[in-house]
Structures are given as structure tokens and as C-alpha cells.
Length: 467
Image (cartoon, rainbow, N blue to C red; front, top):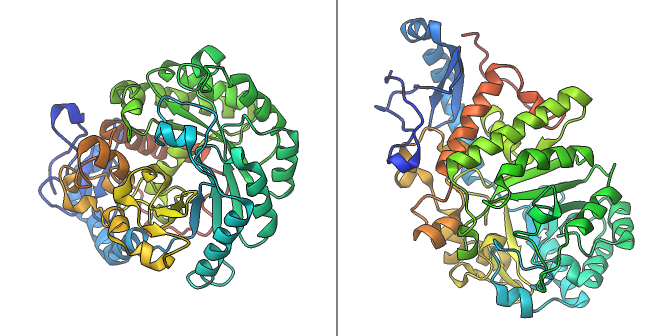
């Protein structure tokens, strides 16, 4: 056994590491009574009472139990990281957007003057995708199409025609800024069970308007609130708040607003720092962690007071990466990430990218849906830059004990901000603090309060020890 290993802020040049190579590493999670014992390679963990640590190490029960299951756990992790096939596509039916958000990862010229698909072209695209998935997915497994952007409802006619043309062939979702989500659009989408994602960055217009305005400088805050009110009671919708320097101190108030509007799921996403504009509003890791965890605490208080959960999906995914790695719903927090492996992105001209985050970065253009076989694109050098990015192969990530709860996201950030795929993304310390907090919740028996109801259906416990 190695000695106790601790989390350290990246600014000090020290990272959580795997110690001297011992199978299990003690990790201080900041809990009064417990610390975690963790194997970095398989993401195996156990919580051990601090007073029993010496006994646990001496009697070898935990290490023996781990060794009995290590091969199976390693194979499970291998399949999660390297055995997936794409089952979803982020379809961008237009490059246009009516907003000029400070941190958008799509270049401004594309959002102002870009192209969009005709109804016929979009239907042709979905037909090609349907044919591809028929040959790659198991019978009965329905692929997913998420209309993404830019702002997909700028091309509402084509989008709705495509949804009707392939009703029953795909599970559909729409990620929208909400400004084009009028009553007719809501009726159309909800009648077909389409998942709807909105974006709102502040509890008040004055805060939202710091980062999200139209090209002419007009506020859209109240339009998004109106859409949230219209969607009240609809189970298949969520709201994203992007955490920046401009709204950081208001994350708790955001949670309160979402809970008041009965939002079933939200995301408090740290800003993606792919483009320079986003980096100008990037918060400090420590401040982000402090306000983010306070917002999680507030969501729990509201759940206890009302009996109604507000699941913060990006944190729930961190919890699931610990509790049940293969049950995670988002594929950003694993290495390689989901880009090109679990999903890929289609631009309006037919170009294919590992993820929407790469649209506009030609080095990651793998080919064109209307010219190239999809499988050829998935195996292209442009896609392999992402699908072969492996935190086991570069520092400091390969010595990090939480690397399979984090994945060193995002590869687009790593490439654009830090100069390569063998570099970290942003927010290492922020992820470390989320993992600490997640383990504390598990130790206190509160993790279920932060997860979707029924998250553990189909899961099974591999090892159950009382330590």
C-alpha cells in the first residue's frame, strides 16, 4: 500500500496520482470519518472508515476482494472506453444563430452568414444515417438524432419535416436557445415526445444579458422563461446554464429558479474554452467549485423541502462514473470521450466531425456524409485524433487516480487552448472537487438524492464490504 495521497490544485503543479503503483490507493475525500480506497486503472473504489484503515490494510480483505474481480472490472472499463459504437448524431441543420453568445464554440462568421439544409437535403441526410445504423446497431436499438447548433429552429421547416419523415426510426432531441420555441413549435415537439433542451444563464435578465444577447444587443431572457413556463410538466426537457465569471455567484439562485419552474433536469456546465471568447469569461477552478457545490447543496435542500428533485445532470454523471461507470449518460467525462465513438456531428454542408465542439476546426473534418461512407469517416485520421486520445498516455493525467471519473475533458479545449490532444483540458481542480464531493455523498448515503429515479435498474453490486 502507498501512503495517503491527496488532491492538489493544478496551479501548484501537483496532481492526484497513483502513488507507488500499489493496487489500491488511499484518497482523502475531505470526510470526517471516511476516505476512499481507489484503483486508478479499473475505477474500483471502496470507502473505509479512517479508524479502520490500518486493520483493512493489514488483513488484506479488501485487496483480496478486489483481486478476485479486477479482471472483470478491467474488461468492463475497456469496453466502455474502446468498445462502443456510435448510436447518436448531433445534426446541425443550420449554421445560423440569432444570438451572439460570448462563449459560443462556433465561429461568429458561420453563425452570421452560414448555410443551412433544405428539407430535402436534411431528409436525405437522415436516410443515409438510418441506413448506416441499420448495419451497426443491434436489432431494436433505436439511434438518436439531436438537432443542435448554432440554432436549429432557425431552420424549423426542414427540421419538422425530417422529424415527421422519420417518426419511429430515431429518438429525437432539440437543443435550442428558446427564442423560436413558440406555441406551435412546442405543440409539435411535445406531441412527438421530442426531448427539448433550453439555455439560460441567469436568474435575472441583467445577469443573462452579460453573455447571451441577440446580434443587435437585445435580451432574450424573458423569452426563455416563457418557454420554460410553457414546458412546465413536460418530462423530456432540460435547461443548461453555462457557468462563467459573469454568473458564477448566482448559480444557487439559478437552481432556485429552475426548481420554481419545475425543471426536471438541468446542467450547470462549466464554459467550454475552445475559442478565445470563452476563455475571457472562464472562472477560476476554486471559485467555480465553491459556487457549483453550493448550488448542489441548495438543490438537495429544495428536494428535501418539497420532495421534488432537480437533477443536475453533469454532476449526476460524475456520481454515476463512480457508482456505475457503464450507466453514465454523458460521455464527456471519460477518455477517449464520446466524440467519434458514441456519437458524431453533422454540419449543414454534410461535413462530419467527432463532436459539434469541433465544427469550424478543419483538422477534425473527417469527410462528408453525401460523398463518403460513414464508416470510412469514423476511421479517418481526423476522427482518430479524438477517438485515440487516451489519458493513460500523457502527463499529468496518466498518474491521476480520478482519470476515469474525469477523462481530461475536453479534447477540443486541449487542442485549441493547450496545444494538443496530449494535453489536459480545462478545470482539473474543478473535477477533483466534484469527485471529493461525490464520495462524501456516497459515504453519507445521500447519492440517490442527486440522481435520476431508477438509475440503478439493471445494475448489480460486484463487491459489498462493510469497512
